[in-house]
Image (cartoon, rainbow, N blue to C red; front, top):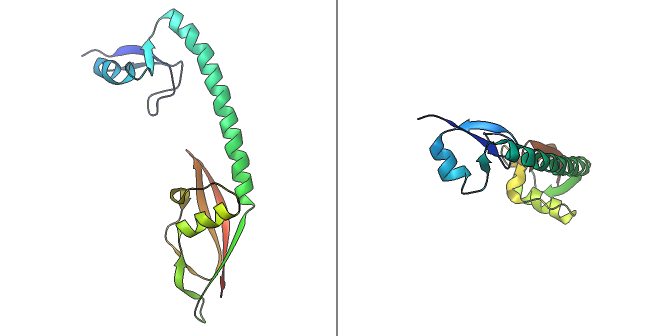
Length: 150
């Protein structure tokens, strides 16, 4: 089957951005893109309309990126402190997990979901640790978590 040229009406992950002309299989266009209003036929009139829409979407995306960057800067400045029982060598009897870090961030006024705190494993040692917080797509911030001996 021959691929068809379509014009994207919105950003489609792994395919293209709004206003871009792409070639896809006819079934993908007919069964997925057209019913969800993500694409239209690639003609001159639609291209002019999509240029204006693409400019608006790019402006909105730039504003969103700027807001996420400001949020990342605010989170980078946060230092979370917690205390837990530990032995003489500094090993915690319990641990500090992602849910606890997210709750500490929420207590400080930052709206972070538990799933957005990215840790390789729970913190099991007294000391200063850096924890990644996922904000949006490829935007992350590092929060400092200080674990003291109780």
